[in-house]
Length: 355
Image (cartoon, rainbow, N blue to C red; front, side, top):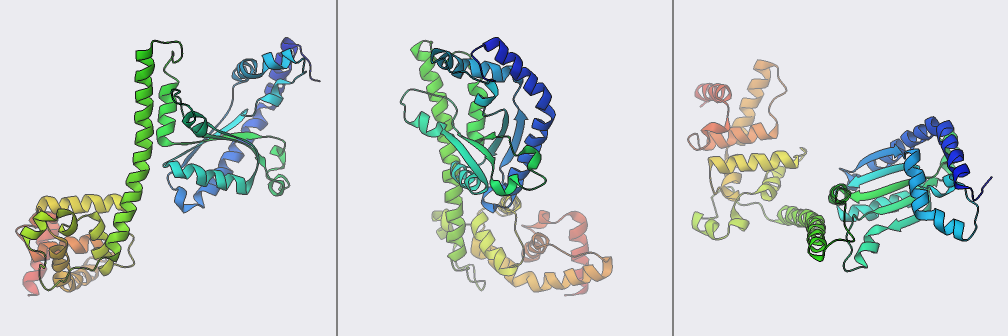
């Protein structure tokens, strides 16, 4: 029964919390598993992580006292503390990019009943001198379809909150909580905190811009003509003046390699390291030269690969190994270190026997 007796309501809330903690924690696990599964089904949200917790009972009481108690007592409105703690069960989704926040919000709207939304991004951007962490807070409950499923019925009465932040916003939040004094402080300190907050905001924006620019470069490279393998076509002098156009890079590597290995999924971090390794062995190598080395030698290398499979009963070369052998065969001096000693020796012996 609601009342205006704070001590009585504290006692009642602690009793409710202790009696229901186990099922609250089970609900937290169930909701987190569900959200993780929904995110996994969205390929554009790769890299998002989900955390969860049941808020400590004393933190709940402090929050109620700080945010609601005075107003309720002034208006003589009876209350029960648990009715005002919307984040008793709380999840946090940390995503990579700013525009992932909207995607996650749309996903939650589709699969849950949304009770309330607090947009801390809009709140902060509407002020000139405030600082703090950004993010989207969404109060939810299971939708009617899920509430009636046997696996969710025990938790059907519980609401929960999801905080959605980018990884940069989450980092700033962690630091923001460590800054003990932020309001009644000298102006020069407030200004420095504002500068720090702005740097995090800039990093968040740049992270997304770099992603978009990278995707644009990949798209551009995918539409470019593959250089002719019959000649180097891009003279060294020309390449030096137009490095971004003619030099081999991760983007045109994907275009050229995809031509030879159309069914292979090249992982970005491996591509980046491989292209860097090629440049260390042959600085300034052009895309045309790279293409020529593969095109000229790939038939021979595939024949050696077939021989190795039969001899050693192995699965054979992956595309990177094929390319390494093509480069070595094209210029054994420049690309000597592209193969390990044992691999190089075995290849040379086969080449001697199969001129």
